[in-house]
Image 1 (spheres, rainbow, N blue to C red):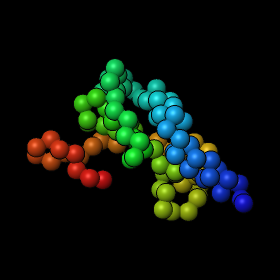
Image 2 (image 1 turned 90 degrees about the vertical axis):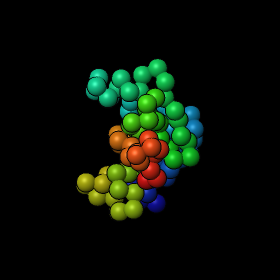
Image 3 (image 1 turned 135 degrees about the vertical axis):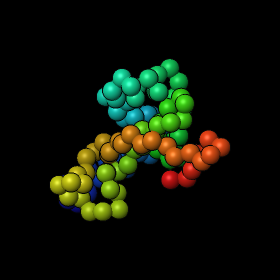
Image 4 (image 1 turned 45 degrees about the vertical axis):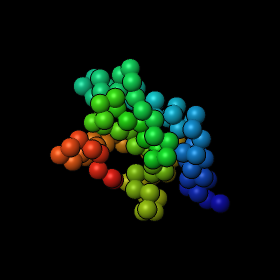
Length: 102
């Protein structure tokens, strides 16, 4: 097993462990700037199935992935870590305020 494959295996294990994934998302949340962080304060929803933490108002999500572009090979711009990758995403909503599928 290559070092990159070992890191990917560790990242997958983290993503499948509810407690570790929640910890990783909380760590990412602590790095947010104040204007975005206020959407996450005091009340968040954890969506383990989609591996994300939703802001209390449903505007943002912290989305965990194995790496930045999971379907592309490991590269300098798509590095594999043992912790995976967390991105802040703005959720799309239809005219009724219902989240559109991603």
